[in-house]
Image (cartoon, rainbow, N blue to C red):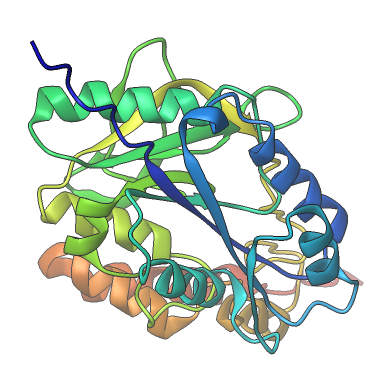
Length: 296
């Protein structure tokens, strides 16, 4: 009886974008290079360096000489940088695309767990999909990962899912550590060019759900990543004057109106104009401080 041919090692393209945080970027790549699954997979790096001036690109190539480093001019931010790297990687014959934030530090068994999760869940679902790896902060709390809609009445209010001991389904996700199958990527294409920094990953997840592509949160945490959303100095900071709050809100890392419009029109239902206006009206309302009457 003839033996079956050996299975080909899955080919994985690791997609990263970075800017001026050399130490973190190299440490994140090191965590990828330390994965226990590496003997069983073929791994290639596609990394966008968006105009770093701290030697990030050079440090990457010293640590990982085979990496494909793409250079930006500093205006790509997260979504643009990931789009550029993803577009280059899609030219190759890869089975999976692994999105990895350059401040995410994976545990050694993360990649193997993600691959096992996909194999098991896809077999049950009858189709390939997307696996989300959750991260925790320095206090052990979930920082990024899969998200679920709170209710149909509030479609854009999302709740983070803590990883469990079993696989979970999610409605969308943060793009810090995500394994996208080739089959899913061929349906969804790249991240949308209408986004600058944030929201492109949320939109990608929502588009996957609409296309019937399953999304699974892997059991346990994939690694560590500190939640960088800070109140102080952001448009949520009510101590700031209105002009500064609006400037922060409309900046690429805030809530730029065009990107938010895309999310609302696509995913908020027929009440999307209300969802779109609400954050801006809220900033206006919470910045209109009526001075206290001075008593003689």
